[in-house]
Length: 205
Ligand code: VGL
Ligand code: ZN
Image 1: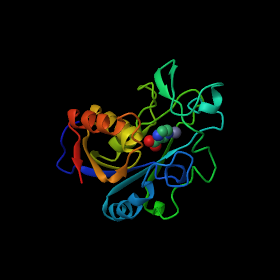
Image 2: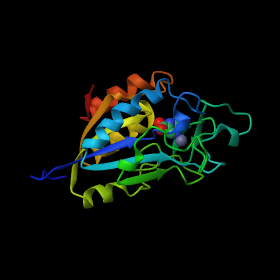
Image 3: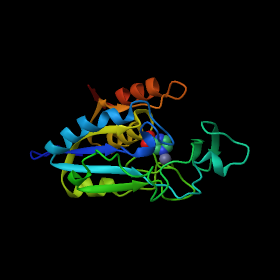
Image 4: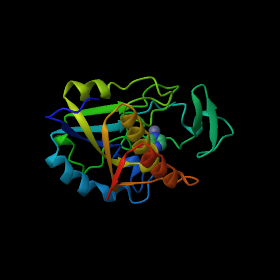
């Protein structure tokens, strides 16, 4: 993406939802600790996007849909390997709602993802087939956005995939690691940090 003199930065807040916070169905350790810092960022950013993991109750990423399989096991989907998760962020449920203290009123746009039964969507930009778009790239381009700051949950899944896609799309990407928390499944946190660094993502915090 060409550099513009009026380069507009956007804040992308990833999946700060009840199910990823302590007590939730797919709780990320310390997930709720990011809320206050993200609220502070929301007050300063010119463009503010929130993402919301938003699955039908029979979503194919749920272990409950695969008889004999348990959460955190891997399966092969038509689009590649997929972790099986506990049921989480079911559309309209309390678990899918944003953390009550997150200042969602500050958001310009909410991108919901993972709403197609057969395909998971970690990234804010593309579903896990890496080609089905969420529409976010078009929105950001239309608003002249060139620089992104990402924060939220989980560092090693949705933040990581979003940051890698954003870098691939040509955005300048900063991840506020102090305002993220990781699931850390089989070394996934270290792998995510390495992958983001290798893609030119700036890790801050
Ligand atoms: C996420 C696993 C499944 C995330 C979403 O927000 O990182 N992780 N769905
Ligand atoms: Zn999910």
